[in-house]
Image (cartoon, rainbow, N blue to C red; front, side, top):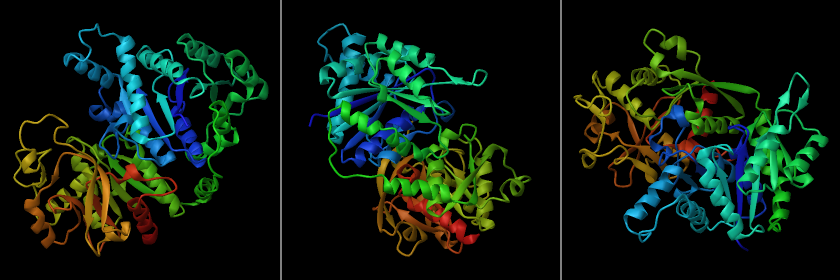
Length: 534
């Protein structure tokens, strides 16, 4: 069959859940036997999210092949359970960068470079690339931003052209929009949706399905009104209600008939017998959790919790498989000191330190890692969190009071974390980064091996500094175990402490590979250790 293209746009306001809608639909179509891939087109001019502040953008989600992408790709992977790639996220900046490079190389043969056709052709080429790379039968493409934004116009024009070129039998447009409820008059209002659809139509895009975001159920009469004024079939107005559990969304949209309508409009037949029983069982397990554990997340970007979105989701995944709810205590590492350490961390069942860059809040993290070690509190350090565990150990156990990272103390004497010799020099930011999946050998008999049950794994990385091999022997002599290393034994990938309920630091980012119905082994084991200790 011809590749099918589904485009998801949003209107009225941002934050309506386009990504969750796209991800849920992907899950429903995959259940029916189709190979599905997804991508996000973002209108901002940054080349990628890699250098953007977490306060501006939230977390950077890293794919297997090392692309630094929008956090919505995390939703796609968690729901659809397919690894995405470098063609899964495109920004305006990347589009113009690619076009200008082609112009400089003379690929346009002296043509005047314009938004149409050159910018739109680049966008269309990218959409085609993800289809070729993934060999997917269905490509779901989310357009970032809100319809009417000036930044989004080239993307809307590009997908309009795709609709013509691929044929309407192979393209479907879904518009996610807000239907607000006025408390004063006790009624929903459809006018914002009507205006949003009108705006989308002005770009030549006629939505096939409208997903109405609402907090309370819509009346049948209102849905018929939306269908009439927005020129869609009556059953093509789908409610997307606010849910207590995010992972209920596929079930809700299935009950509303979304997948069935999509297949009808794209002239597709189901490829296999299917059901959502495993997904429903997972949701019921989530709802049945009555016990709670408290995890102190000690970080520097806690004011915007989306900065650690995949960490949060992975913690919840690990909790649910252990039949407990995870309550996260968001602790700003800048505010931690020796005087308030016990007060802030004393009631934590577990402590996690996530990744990050820069020296702000580092001393508070070091105190937190030491507190977990000394008080037998289960600890999981991720990326920077592993480096912090090493610095804390060096200071408190090895007696190297000035131990630090070369990132934070470039002129320090005891840089237990530092650039590798081949990383030295005046290199640009990101030029020395390890990005994407790398293999790791696991030490037999280690706690890490108990977690994974494997001798070799592959995990995704996003970091620059490494454990300094000059200190390996000293750490080992004082009891730290190097339970994960690169296959050539050159790079330390994981450390742990024996005779502790759970104390592991990993240089990689396991949170990116955790799934709600298949929790990552490290998060599952971390929460299990907490439950066992309790």
